[in-house]
Image (cartoon, rainbow, N blue to C red):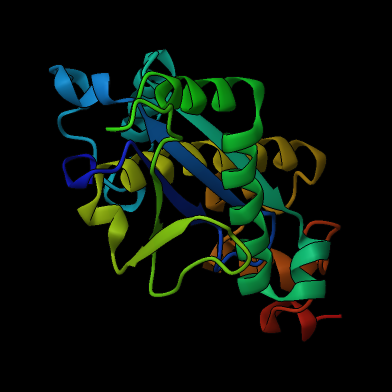
Length: 223
């Protein structure tokens, strides 16, 4: 993408869409051009979060957080918002929030605008950076006022989206581990809210707790 004339490429991905409990979490990531001009051996085998073991995700996330050439923003929607909007719209809401936060935040805006101020057009005027958002999936993000491209299986094809998937997954897993201390009998630290046999058994035995998505069928049947 950078070779195609774009100054900034933002990758975005979400995690937790199919969970029965907990938030849906989105991460938006952007690298500066210097990152792709240097060798990054510790990130060479980075791939989408679903293809990695937990310790591998943690390792790559730690390396990404050390990298000065990366800026990212995380946004999420809680179960009540998911139940009110539906999971698809809640994820899209979080996506818009993540991209807008990345662009408008003090760090993100400086990072993006600095790139813009160093660019000049043929007429000598300063121009703003040309930005594109790469979205994992089939559809673009409604209500986002910048160029986009939806890429099916983008987390497996695009490095920036893969980075977003890892950071979002690690962030959400930590959230669910914290929730497990507040709701200790559901096993959130193990299944992270997904509909495993362990989770469904706990649901049947205990009923839904405050972070369950009541609009999801396996939960709504128990209310």
